[in-house]
Length: 338
Image 1 (cartoon, one colour):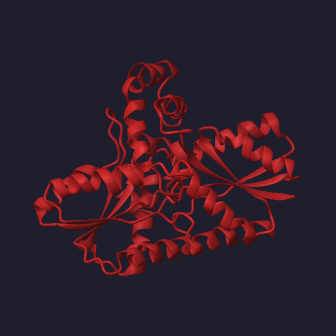
Image 2: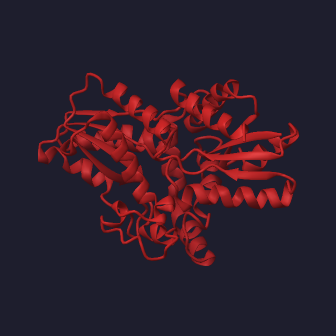
């Protein structure tokens, strides 16, 4: 019997520091997120970052927390509930971090008699800190707890025509009536070394602008290329001229060099360049979360206006959009027929 496990990032159980701290510890101690030797990672995370970050993050979570709970989990569950009636196979939801574990999700499917699982990370673009860490953990759990289960990893869908169509339609709908100077495509940032680590050719990725537009098998696992390709396909579909949009990367940690240009720096500098009305889309996320609701829709907006910006539109993620749920339902059904 076949079944599907949708997997998103995760969330603390509450917006209180006592729950935020263990969640951040699990997240930041993941070797695919902070990819340095364990002792150094433990020193950085537990000796430095977790001394202050839980209080700051808790404050941010409190600003976006919904009556039903964490927006990421509430919206992901709403999506799952809409997808389930569109297919005959069971659809479960899990998170990479937090209490809604992948093990619980696989157990839920196992209890329904599922032996073949389609693992669908809810990330359009492939990255070791998102897609790969889900795939690796799911396989570890499968071997240990569900040895008779088979898992099929659904590939990154950054360029799938049906995804591009619903993403474009969503952006177009939210832009209606908004006369913007610039449309910002803000993707989650990752350290540049992650790009080189996932380069299957070990030589293609130069991060100089040329490699992302030069055909290579490295592109199947190159986050940077996939971000630019998603953008290219969307602006092509919407007919947005080159001078009306840009690509940036958000949510970096201090220290190593991360993908540039940085969202906060670019947005803060826009008013001085005469760019007073902007819209921001976040296509690395299909579900609204802390990074979209607080970092972009609140903080980036405040900073933009403080620097002389006049109008700021944060475009929501796809969330439980009917067209998006239909696309996911179609992917599941196509796989289930095989």
